[in-house]
Image (cartoon, rainbow over all chains, first blue to last red; front, side, top):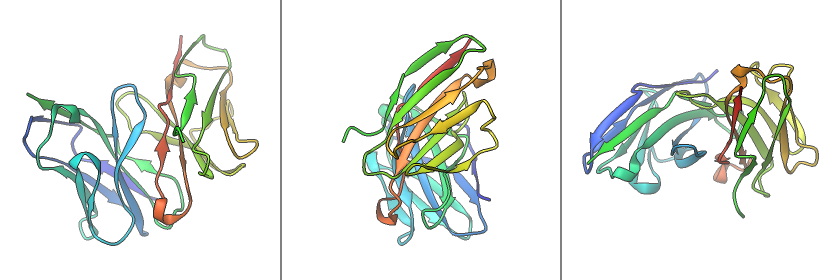
Length: 114
Length: 115
């Protein structure tokens, strides 16, 4: 079975500073990895995904993530955050090959301060 | 395509009543998923359909919960004899199965409050 650990429940950061949201997963099989963002009282929006190929994945809103198989990590980064990036971010994993459902982490609340 | 639609957005019900939620997925997507999200937690898987077949159900889905997708298009999630512990956001998502486009598109959710 797959599982996801998001190492930080809250990350406060100042506007225009860089940010990294950490995600580790466990799985005995190949996986697909995802980052979603959730704004208050809304559903989840896909930021980016890793299915295969290049380990550096670029997504929307200037975010990127790097798949590290040896460290079983998929950390999300942005070089310069905006106030509008304040939201909750979820890392998710599924069994590779379009099989199985997504397993989500508990989320990281990103608070961007002016 | 307008994305994944969920109805209603909010539902307040008295304990013991039955409630039903509807999800309209993206039309080309043959997979449809239901998740439940409580405050401070990530979404938890409930069940999913491929076309009209319900392929997997979580242990979280007690006998009071039932889901259908009768024609392989929209889906309904019914909760019978609601309990206060059922209060949560219920999220629906759909996805294609082809690898190139794989990934879930979520609806805005239905927030259930049981009083």
